[in-house]
Image (cartoon, rainbow, N blue to C red; front, side):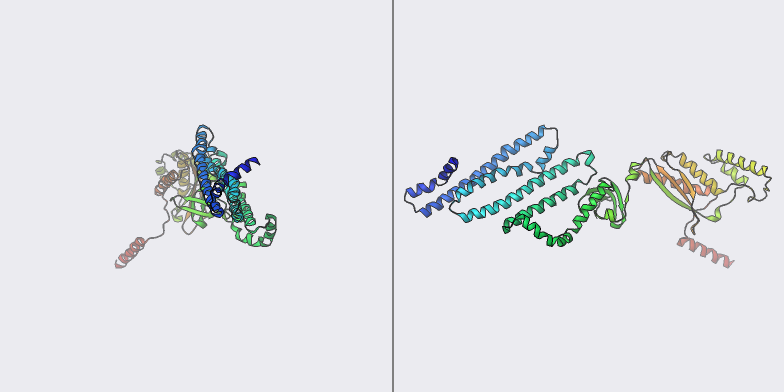
Length: 431
């Protein structure tokens, strides 16, 4: 109380001196008020300067010496700056009532503005801390693939709603509890306005709990034209950097409601699957004669197989006294079967194919385009550019090998083929 009395006398010192020297009391009052305001402004500026020069800089120097990066992120998010504003506010809160003691309306306006600013400052401080927490957690290995930003956004939405409630209560003079009760009538409207936010929040929880998508996953979402790496998971959107370096934004809820492809399983597996088919003309498939087999024995990869297999077939046919005048009688090899064995052996010997995973060469049901011969295997290298090179290298060889087995690939006739056929018809008609 003694300090308050001393401070009040100090604030009124100039006014009392002017009145003692015969100046009009009202003029003395306003001159005293002007001087006090200027002194208060310089005081606040001086305190701000001291805080920036010494306190904040000392905090920066302290963070540079610590091993943790958390305090470094506090600097980046301006947390010390916001905390430093508390001291000038306390000075204003304590001195303004003394300076404007004779102006109750000014004090009332000051209290109103001061309370709103304090609410906003608290939100800023909390937001700065949450941003620091988000940046710090992203540096931790266990949180790098988690949608931390979604949870930070949810917390900030709740904080801003609470802050707006207090601001509204300050403006209207009503209690916060009364205002919250009145919100019940408008809940349907709020649900409509924040529908996307609520859906995104629910989706982000499901995505995290069920481990559907992580930051860094490669996903393909045809509906939104996304094909690339997930770089960010927010409350309402998921950001994907496509392989052409463009960005696609996907609603978070779509990860739950729609179907998309996540390549994480491939990235975590020991190999990446190659699955492709070539189409063989059905009329090029035939039984092999001894002359055909002798010719194919020059192919080193299948020479041992042909020798062993043909001996087994000959032994069976001899034991059963099969009439060999027709190849259809008994057992006989076909060029397509030998080709399948060749492709399987080729893949088994290919250095880029993973031998511990499936290697399958099979027929599919015949189609109007011919017989699909499907090749299924896994490349050791999962990187996209290398995977494509390996796939192309394998099928370059397989396609080039087809004619050596007396087989033909199906290919729809082009304009040149039709013109050539018409030309042959016209030449034959002339003859």
